Length: 65
Image (cartoon, rainbow, N blue to C red):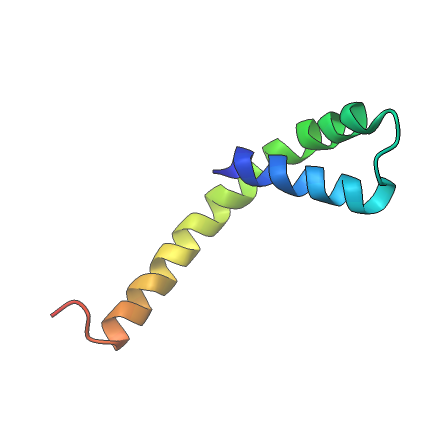
């Protein structure tokens, strides 16, 4: 999931910043190679936090009954 998000976001942000220059693909791939490991780390940090938050919300709504 982190790889897909990094792939799509770097493509979009590279396009927003540069348009489509002749070296778009190489710039995009460079951004992706840098972003993917950061996205994985962010996902590993965010997943337990969001799971706990979801559990609290579900308990508050009485969904565990």
